Image (cartoon, rainbow, N blue to C red; front, side, top):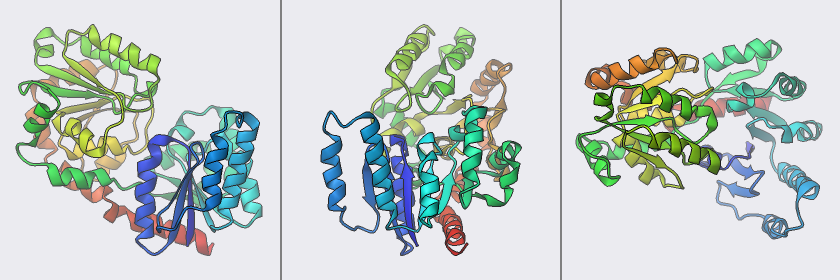
Length: 378
């Protein structure tokens, strides 16, 4: 098989790179292309085409903007696609609306891998536009059965096209190597958190959809006796505008609770300090599918408090313990969790093993390959 992975968000780089490397291990030919950054990667260690290198020079010219840049992007994808028989679109944005009919006319097999907000956070007009294009693609890939059920409420006619697969999580392998009985204390020391503080992580990135303000408002309602015992970590590494980060910092500074807002790029090894140092992870984001970050916190024995509207049934189905909350009882649930964190951590004592079974690449790559094979022979 010859597979081209198309994507546009910078923070998708690592997941797509890991997927590409795993596919390449099976002697299939695979490359990825970031349509925004013009980042082309071949995972079979072939040299980058010279014309791609020339394109980087061209798009660096200040006047190459707007309609001209869109035309160059479209031309680049169509030229790349000539060398592949399967095109896997990651995140279904409006950019692909013109490309899908052309690719189908050229005989390409097309899979759309839905990431979450390209379904959950689009309006009805956009869904109707997507509907016309879903009719033309071969496979629609979703991450969980729960997402499938929700997807079919809007697109019942595409049931036969839907397949379920989720990304493996390479970070689990790294965490597995470094986790030991003493590493939580060591990681707290590494990042300057007092050893006697219970660490609560608020969300997993800087997206406004994580509702940081609302979450911090709920935390502010805790009694001061509990506030004195906790430390807040607020990851804002990606997804947040400078203005929004400032707003969150301003909010956190008024809580009378020690905190750290995490910004800037970090290596996997660096960020693992924060995951391991954390005791409780709270996510009340508006929508999600199958968060790799949440899996990492669960693997590191965090107690997860997750909004009841989030599609995390897959965790329950795989014997991963977490606490479901709604906005009305969040403060009480958090208070109880802080006071009894060791008991709740014990209830999730098997979470690391079950998460690893669920999301290591060795456990999921065959599912991806079976979907690609199905497309190839269709």
